[in-house]
Amino acid sequence: MLFSKRGLCMDFIEFARICEQLEGTSGRLEMIDIISRVLPGLPDDELPIFIRFVMGRIFPDWSPAKLGIGPNLLYEGIAYVAGIQRDDVVRVINRTGDVGRAVEELLAQKEQTSFFPEDLTITDVYRDLTSIAASEGKKSQREKLLLVRRLFTNSRPLEGRYLSRIMLEDLRIGVGEGNVREAIARAFSVDPALVEHAFQAENDLGKVALLARQGSDRLRDVRIEPFRPVRMMLAQQGTVTGAVADNGAMAAEYKYDGSRFQFHKAGNRCRMYSRKLEDVTAALPDVTEVLMAATTHDVILDGEVIATSDGKPMPFQTVLRRFRRKYGIDSIREEIQMVPYVFDILFLDGETLIDLPLFERRRKLVGVLNAHLAPQIVSDDTEEIDRMYRDALAAGHEGLMLKVPGSPYTPGVRGKNWIKIKPDVDTLDLAVIGADWGEGKRAHVFGSFLLACQDQGELVPLSRVATGFSDEQLQEIYVLLKDRVISQQGKEVRFEPGMVVEVGYSEIQKSPNYESGFALRFPRFIRLRDDKSIDEIETVDGIRERYTHQGGVRSQEA
Image (cartoon, rainbow, N blue to C red):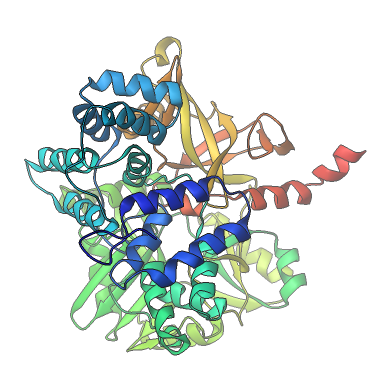
């Protein structure tokens, strides 16, 4: 390992070389081995930084800190350092198809005629990125640009490849959370299950690595704390008969067409977090007020908030209007009434509850909440559950959630303990990674979109979608995506990943045309999912399972 002359610090060039090695490695076990050999030699202050960086992240998922730079500012920064125009940067990106490779090439050309004032360490990079995230006010963009310039000025070509990718939070080396968890366990000789459990509560693998270095007991002692949000438990699609056949009696709850929230209360303080763990307290003062009044205990609650009009649920996009709102909150709260429904409790008066079975968590929840409790029945009678399902649809809700009564709460896990029942189960949440410009009256907006699923931490193309959009929706999507463009060739545009959409389809087919190996037949846009992060989109394994379940394998063999 290379260390800086300023002390026991990892040089950023060494980090870049490790990333290059990982990028050229396809085997999961080899990746884990590479990372695990690095971790023991890192000092305590650098270990969390390395862990987050190698996952393409800068801050923990729960942190409110955001880098706040887009591709355009990055282009301006590298153009200044390379001594060229911004348009020249864009042309190189379009030719290479990769911002990282383009930056590497431009810095290589500059390297021939310049020297580097100082060697960068990963701590230096983290410090400057933190300063970028903290920059606010009228002069913030100028301050951010100066810091970006400084970083690239001191970057070697290979460093520039991975520095630019980290800035865009798209490292593209195929290292996922599972690989890092296994590497931590191997590096510090602890049980992988303890690492995973600590991560569920801590929501920061960087911090978990530090605890693992201190031993198994420190991992066991991790507790959920108020105002440090944890990832929300997720559900799989399924059927009533299938869920009951597999598990017996199920806890059935309405599936609301709203937005997930996590409510934290300690004493007279409270905060509310979105599904993406963003602090939305200021946007939802009416919701926080009623939940504060609903309990006298210190709690972390999981629930769903819906928008209503005359007592009837309003569309999901109406809910998002409230979540997105930053100004004029008082006026819009009168226009859009928000109603929370709480269905789970993760923390109560200093006690972490996620390991308790659902029925015990429900008993505690009923005991501490005096309002806004989501209705629930427990039954193994499919007809009784079907009646509740029909009641849910008649009331304007999406369907049902079926939950295994004896199951723990597993943050961030999309397991078989929660099953969602909807009229149209053939939908997927996918990332928008590219688009084609529209034609005719839609020539000024993007007309069709390239969608991707996850595969071991990487985004791989699955399908294109061009139907289901209104003109208003295309305009809205254009506004959200226009500053995320990272390359363009002809009519084709590629984006910095970040937007998630829900799409419907008639069938999954095997296809050599997309890197995922699959394609969607008759895909159609359903809605934006601003409430979901890239980490929550469908995986290739999930696509493969759906393909098999629909009988695709048999039909291909016939």
